[in-house]
Length: 177
Image 1: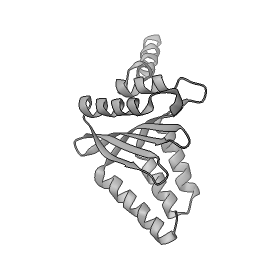
Image 2: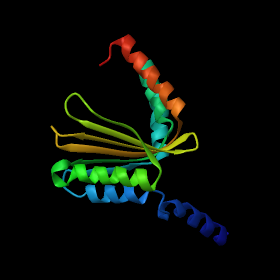
Image 3: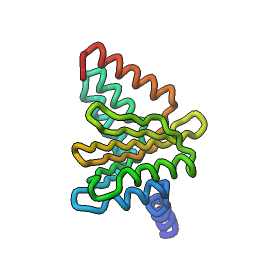
């Protein structure tokens, strides 16, 4: 009995001690979470799934149902927001993306400027036809803040495109900005 309990305890603790995150992402978060206004949060996948189930039950809006359906596909997510004055943000983000794309087989999917000067960058890692990880970075120079998200997913590009197309169609029919 004691032996079985000890084995179960060890197996339960195993996920918390194994390095399950990309070391480049982990180091970026560790470096940029330092500072009074900088915040880093890890949201477990089961919590995202639970929240999206509850949200799906609580809404009648088709657009929100699509967003909750998309959230179902996200696993453990790391979020970070930091003050750009505290770091050489452009250099750090460029290095992070370069390291991910050259050493870890990530692909750049989007890089653009918003209407108010914010920069958005999206890179993904694919395993066969499935998007296994997404990294999104949004820098807003007017607010002097950068938002970083790293998430494990289980989406295909077609599923993501289908959901985004439906969201865009909902925006067009409802006039949402």
